[in-house]
Image (tube, rainbow, N blue to C red; front, top):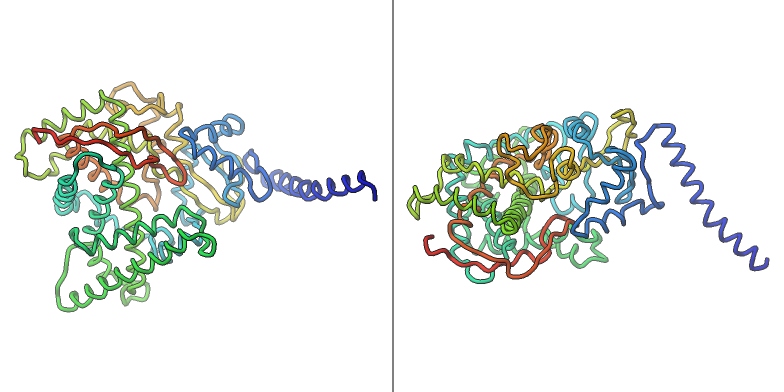
Length: 481
């Protein structure tokens, strides 16, 4: 066999599997009438293009290019699976509303290892419905007004007392949201125990964004070990509270409600189930809200006009209250421009870029078929950043949320196009609580401090939306605070 024969043999050996791969996926597309798109390379698909885009300050072209070529519902292949990607608000709503009927939540086993198999994120069916309802009952407007608002105000103040000079705003925001979540779950005020818990918990969080193989990843191995320590610490609290409950002692927090709730067997939830549930709520209440706090300040700093108007609104509120007086529900409800800032931060920041679901059977939508078992990604970000739904969508403009502002298209009022907390049966149960926490945080931020960025910092979007350097600022306490 000469060199030419060897070359032809190698070419055919390499090309034949690719040809078979191409023919199989073309046949599948024709048979099922999949949405148009490109499955990319074998095995890798378009994962590398997606990651590369989201590691830049402008990830939009990944979606823009495919929407312009294929439309708002297209086929791709990311993270090891063929995926139907939706940038269409009506399709997203259809996906979210049909949770448990046509689609089900789907997350990698690595997530289950860190959250626990009984976490709210991984629950399905009637159990998820009951636990989601229970969570909402401890984060609704009445509970926030009558019980949580005073703690939110107090803990924000407490943390800000130590601020001086250079501050890493994202780290400080994380302290606040962690303390608030622990207080809501277990009635603990900041102490040495909560500090130690937070240190271990931060190691758990790091495990979500690394290679999920303990053999190869020190970070993931450390996260699994930290998860064990967190579970052990929470387990001790659960057992102690059980003993207190048997003696007739009861606190008004989420743990008390879990201890009162009957499990599937009618005998109440096990310690493991309660611990997994609380770990998941710590994740939900800690990472996302602290990031929104940080980005709200960043966006306002870069928009002096919006910051000035926000300061005016909160100066009026503070002027009618004594310095030590906590914010009341009426104060929160009077923050009309703050609500605009919160909405716009949620829209532009897109902390939850979208949600993955899996088709439980063949699903027909928009004239196409999503095959059973296929992954579906409902992109919330794509809709929020679409100029057809929001005028100048990629510009931070809180005035677009004012009535008759003319800054947004008429469709922006639709429930389908603004979904920062998801939708359907899995809509974030802490949505209103997050809004209140952010509003109270901004109140004390603008009435107590002036600040400037300590250095240039930029947004990154992979694996989550955040600032690259944790947004360092130089703070100066206001004389009138």
